[in-house]
Length: 271
Image 1 (spheres, rainbow, N blue to C red):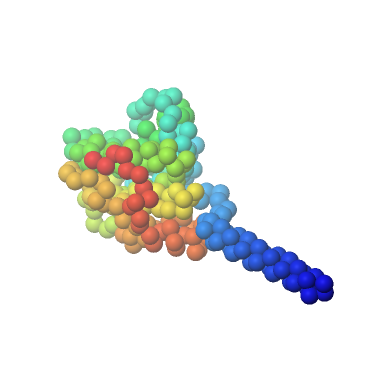
Image 2: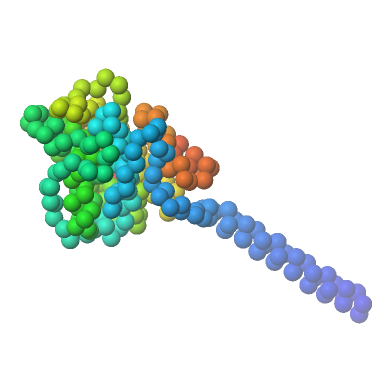
């Protein structure tokens, strides 16, 4: 009888021990497969400031104005799913100087002598701001413009902009930073010597999926797909000297910016 009781007791202990280990392993595997939960800092889309360049916050986007080149080093904003899908407001085309720029922004007249060659190219595209009358109007500040060849502005750059809206839709919002790569000795236009970048960049951050992607595209009539110009965010940082998404925790920032995984991005407008 005692032997039987002893066996039963040992069996119960072994059973509890087995199930305890089993569920511990399941819990560990479940937790290890989960992404680290991110705390999203305020203004996570903003790059680190560049020297004494003026930071200007408009209603829907923020920019860093580079007086030497008379345009923004970067324009940064969050684009939500609802904003990307909105069609509430039409283009206003009210191009005008930005009175928030303390030393004066580029003027509309700077672009007029070369209007047949260079478009007043939006850095943050007007089509991203159809959700707000104010945001749409402010997208036409000259501080948000850069001299883009017409074939580039209305070509593969435009398709990339459409792709970003697609990603904002399917990934429930993204963060966007864009600008020209501003280097020494660039050609200029207009009385205020607005620099003409040879290349433009765009970086996109999807925090939910903890992934990022960058693009560096030449300011020319591009024939191949813009997908061929995809790079890691680290590569854009190397080309621009900018530090993107410094508000993220260092390990998360390093992981997102050093990795380019094209399979994680669903391309729709890959022309």
